[in-house]
Image 1 (cartoon, helix red, strand yellow):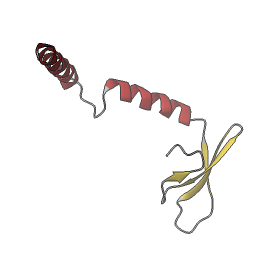
Image 2 (cartoon, rainbow, N blue to C red; image 1 turned 180 degrees about the vertical axis):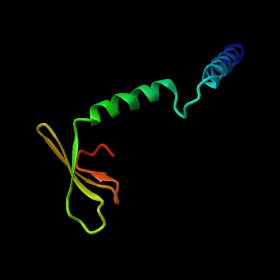
Image 3 (tube, rainbow, N blue to C red; image 1 turned 30 degrees about the vertical axis):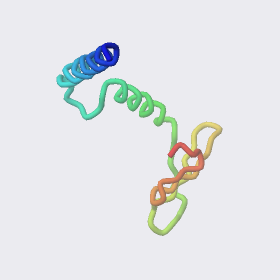
Image 4 (cartoon, one colour; image 1 turned 180 degrees about the horizontal axis):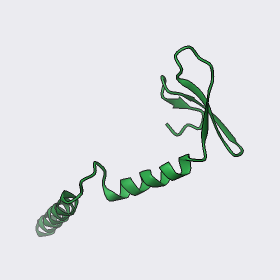
Length: 83
């Protein structure tokens, strides 16, 4: 019982410490997620969309050097299976 109580107290201290650190953040994302998003944004500059000619304008061929994927914004699908 004593060990479980110590684990519970440790978890509570850890969560409250993280909450205090994040209270000063003004953005909607945590620092780790923000850095991942920034990295993906930088990599996305190499990709170029090309409209596939559908009626509602939601289907695109997106290409980068040596890679092509088909993206459907209505269905939220991509041939790269990232979504």
